[in-house]
Length: 607
View 1: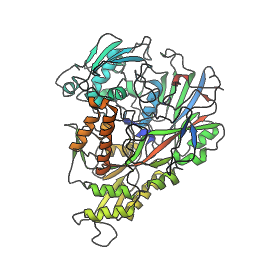
View 2: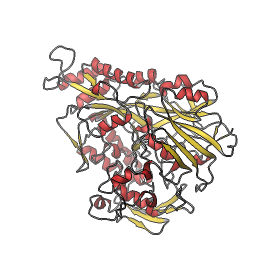
View 3: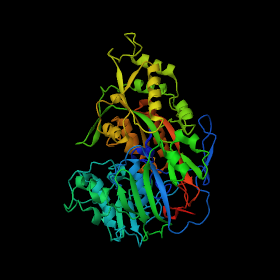
View 4: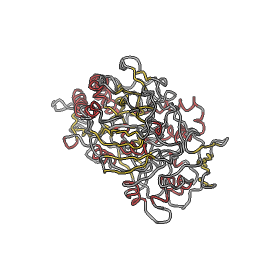
């Protein structure tokens, strides 16, 4: 769907998704109701339990603010974007890749189709839909009164424009995935063979039809319904602009428009955004007159919250102990649609073919080496000691939030240095010169170059802890360039397959579609490890096939896929996590529960 990429979060995991919202993942500004990503399903409407068993924190958090007073008229709020570097400012759903930009997008723009607590599209948004009996045709109708911030009506041609951008041969972003390619005629358009997408039919300004090649259950959880204001940004189809120019234009970076509850009034690049109320918002008049969203570093966010300078902020888990007893705020939390992982580079991205090419001779090509490195990581201790129990060991690449598909039979690779050593010995990684570090299978020196992000107080200790874990089993691991890299530099290197990187620590916001093909498919540019296999291709295809409308069949397919990834370990999940939000006690009508009826336009302050 939109692996935005995620939900979320730069400290190591990058803001919620950081990752790439891409990710697919990011936290939507209104707790999951304004966008289609970064949502988490709580145990019940009022609170979220911290799990059970040895990995659980002994704490219960609410999902909603408790202040039940009326929102004051013309209130104002200050919201923190907790980041240790400037936001990029690519403010369009088709082009953005990081969570910081996704946070901004969530306030001024939204999808045409809303989604529910199970992450399935509904008719409660700015548009409604009907799916044909054979599940291959979706008819979408935009409701009356839905207008862009400049007063122009949102038209079906604006949603068509998003598909024309995403499928364009010159599109270099990360969102040309299965759900886009599944539209009839899209592959031909993407290859430059046609100028039109035959599977999208405009009936009138408010109604349109999409026809799909495959009747896939991902249509209900991954349908892309983010419109693009063609009249505002310029038209690539008429030659008015180009894809490259569009992505960098002021119409996206300086004065973007959407049809969400707030308009962007002013952007201080990389630092802050001022929003003004959109009085013509289709749901009704927003409660707040204005919002200021500003970058606050992870090291100072707690102090800012204590002073009352910030009304709403994500709180790094490593600072939970310093904020849990602060007066005049309440903490909300839920399990994130995100996970952190170690990725093992095994090839390169072929931009011409637009697919991942695996190198069988890559340094990290041995699955036993990858398995051993996973067994060597003490993720449980990191979650307990550095994150106060708000992180817990990852076991699989389909996260527990997706209860129907998460394989509970897979227990991951728990911390077991002796097992790790045994795997390495059997695979031929031996210390042949007695220096305490193993040589590779050819008897040559083995140095594994590790890239990791800076940000927050835990980034460096975690990187060092993993390096020590690996040293304990005889693997020499060194930081790329001898240091941690900031978010933007880190992902530039990872995305571009910098040859200096052998392994890296990243994080994904999964988005609300359990389909993992956007992160691990052969043609997924987000598949940064560049690992591929025919079995992987088959299982990912089966998971989005028409047969996958049968829940038991889809679960069986995804169980097999998780087992394959457990065996091959192209990436090793390290921790799942709880996301913390601090809300000033004056905040009303705010929820992080995706099943809540509260919407962003209702959020306000009582004094």
